[in-house]
Length: 302
Image 1 (cartoon, rainbow, N blue to C red):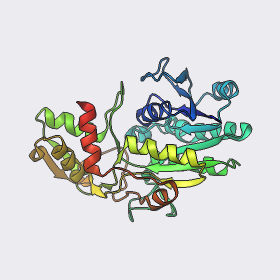
Image 2: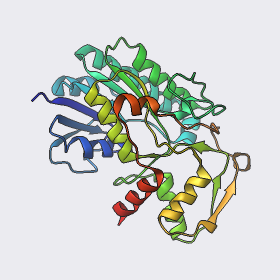
Image 3: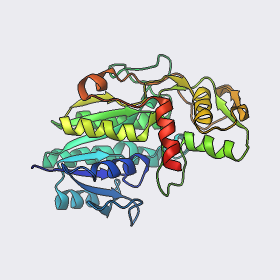
Image 4: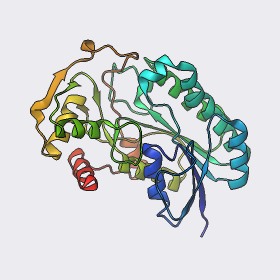
């Protein structure tokens, strides 16, 4: 049996943990997890781990030479949208420059490169979007992620893929930031009222489904851009209500608001969301319904 040697960057992050957990259970993959931390946040018996900073070109080259990956999945990213707006140089170095460096190393050794991107490459005026829609980001985060997409496409790689997703939710270990669904559970469980946008519309994505979609893309060796997300197009307010319902929490604590009422460092696209017909057709991608995903999340949280 031929093994795919898969290097995962950002493996201590939210999506990275899910990918490590999934791929390390599958006999077809030899996985090396990499991240900034000195130790992995999750233990996977069949998965190696080494610290790696994606902004360190020499460090990247050394690890690529030692491991010789056949596939690189780049989950490393700066995803705090407001911090990206106020710390633009760091955002650009991680979300754009580092992607170009990783793609270049993949080209040198003939590895497949998979770049994780976002619906924030769009302006939010015409969602939900398919893969052919023209990007037009409205903030620094989206601009840098679009530059990362272009780096993957234009580096001369024969084997590349860009995966766009949005509003990822689920569980992970040891993360400094929570995700939207867990934030809703935490706040409502404590009896706190929360304000949630009615005018920001997305297709929320369960992290385990996203990891499965990425595995399918790697397995079938696909090239190009693919949307991987949930199917349901909902406002963040309605998503919060669905979370409350799934966890038997008081939805009356969720107050509707709109983007004009709160000042944030970065603008947000309003109506995005992603159409996943291409992934469903070409990859056999089958995300859970939102209700099933939230029920699964509740069972995982115990």
